[in-house]
Length: 174
Image (cartoon, rainbow, N blue to C red; front, side):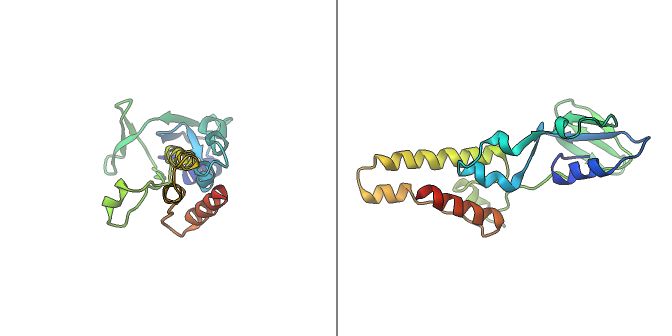
C-alpha cells in the first residue's frame, strides 16, 4: 500500500485475509487529517492535533508492516517498487496506490513563486507564520496604507478548503 492517507488506511482497515502480508509505505510517519489544515494555517489548531501516528492507527494488526520511505519507481511489469532511503526493491502481488495530492496550478506553474499551497503540515505552518508575522508588523506600521497591505490576505480557490480558510482568516483579522 503506497500512502498512509485516507485511501491507504481505509484499505488496511477493511482488508483482512489470514495469509496476507500488508506493507504500508509512506514518507511521513503520520496520517494527516487534511480537511483541518486550514485550522493550522489560521492558528486555530496546532499541527499535532490533526496528525496521528500511522503505527498507532494500525496498531494491533500483526499482518501489517510500515516502512517510512519514499517511492522512487514502480515497475508494473515486474511487480516491483523501488524505495529511496533503503535503496531496496519490494516485490508485490497486489499494489494499492494512494499517494495523495499536490497543489495544482492548472498550467500556471509560475504562480507557485507567489503563492503557497495547502496540502501538508509544512504548508500550513508556513502560511501561519507568514500571516501572523505580517499581523505583528501591521501592529506597529507607521501609516494606514502599510497596515492595510500587511492585513490583506488573498485566498485563491473557492473549494471547501479555500472557503474555510478565508472565513478563518476573516475572523482572525477581526
